[in-house]
Length: 400
Image (cartoon, rainbow, N blue to C red; front, side, top):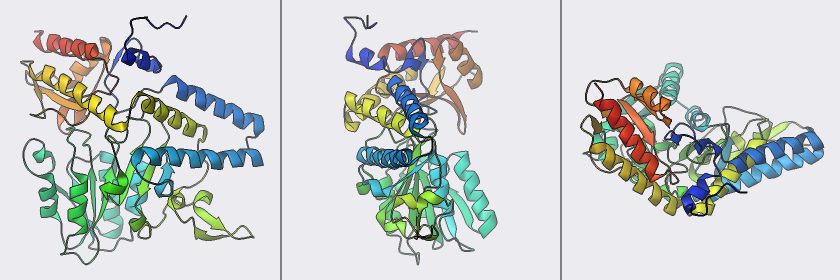
């Protein structure tokens, strides 16, 4: 017995690979994805392998090297780049920290951020400012959600002292997709600065949801995680550093994985590629879990096909929410990705709504800036889940 109905649709069959999708409607992919069973099995088998042949031995060391290489290659293949540009990290925040702390900051330098960045990145910029007397400012990208040009906005806020622009290509709060390629072109060609303006992208929401080619995108640094839209295990992420930017970035977190040793075992140089920013021992069995998750998505279709499905489903959700009297979506046009943020207009509290929905089996979240509720749909979200969610929100907002 497989437990699969003879009339099940391809999406329903595909969803059965994700145990967390059973008995609830999941709309929190922007927080953490639903780990597939194949990933769980791969992680367990890897831990068993370590104990059988190690956990510390020559055979295991060779296995670690091979696992790391295969994981960089799998990531690079999905992101349109080469494996040597990929640094394996634990999450997107670590990747952003590697890029932000690796710049040789001088007093008076300037960091420009969008006003939609995650608090962890804001805190990093604030600490860099405190230690090195670097100026940090923000530009009003949130105001461009429904009108305005984010590229021109960023260009207007560049200064001769600007060394780094930090932004997300898919904003975690409003769901807006920024034209990173155009923004990077403006920054790299800003002629009022004596040095190149680098671009760091926080890609927490884009990897696994948007089709990407980092070689064509042009950003200098691109930090991402595997546990959100890729639905991999928590604890594996990465950082892309463009070949042109590699020499401008100094390692801050330093360990044996990032250095070259001489015959006496002494460090003599950095690794020649993205490995130089890797540190030391990691939870290597998680690597196979991420690769398994990526492979399952590829079984469904290409990144472009998955993205098309995400946009269809998010538009369906957006349209349904827009019809509710007591709901207003932040975006006045259909979203260009899987994030749909909305507010209640009847005075009811957003956290009360989310708590109510969780009791009904719908998992969403609130955000603080702007004060709203966020729902995330993936390519395998069911239309009937969306229908039931809209009905539940309508019932809550209409209940006196």
